[in-house]
Image (cartoon, rainbow, N blue to C red; front, top):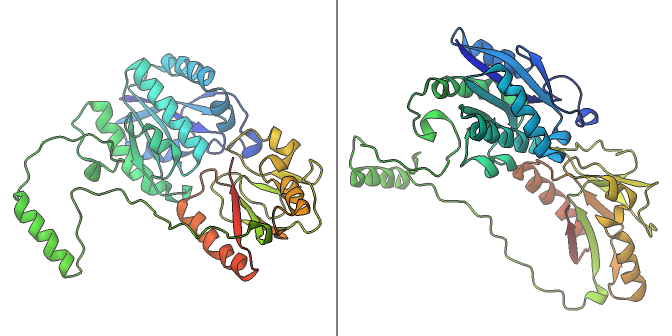
Length: 347
């Protein structure tokens, strides 16, 4: 029987949400959360002997200490396999899964596996070091993730040959190997060309990176007469987060009126962002959304005016598709309101 240790965050352990992201690592006997589905998929070939739970904030803010503690927990169970996640598109969770899986692989020399959405920052950081199964962007894709993770996990534990990423479902890791194809390259190339010319589906054997290129707008001729708007992915919202913008993987943005507001104070504004230490942003939200300095520029005539509305969301783990959709919507409002330029602030 293959022995498996599973790592999950506080959310999937049903400990709590963002308010419990500070909890340090703890170990529990047997399976928990997504481990139930993994165990079912393993059937009688593997057993999850322990589940390690750690808060996302705690791990990312105490990474060296957390890795050291978790490594000792894993050692105790002498597993044949270590699985983390899946993390889907949760940024801090993805980084934690990637970091601890790599640490277990390097220090304990046992097979490791995790899963996450291709846009998760953890995927870019660790895909060349460990196997990361490609998942959907939310936990709604759990069934699909387990379906791909379980068989690959068993293969890794048994030391079996791992096929290409397109066959096994993991993210491409930059490794190329020689193999014999049934058809010669010339025929495959012609087949792809004919399919393309006939508007039929085909799959390239060498996908190229898709870079989003945006042509810059012309420079503002006279900024002293320009209306400037503020937009932020740093999560600055009125106190209490009235629109309940998520701290990670945001599904919405907010539009807020700052007419007459000269300064963002601790009493009136805060950050909803869950991907950085909020202390300094909460003490002075102008550090992320510089309303105070733009009011000074406005008073001194360095800019024409500051637009009365600003737009805010959280960039932490937010899918590029969602971010584009947000911008396409509120940019039309900005144009309609006669805004000449936008200052986009991040973290």
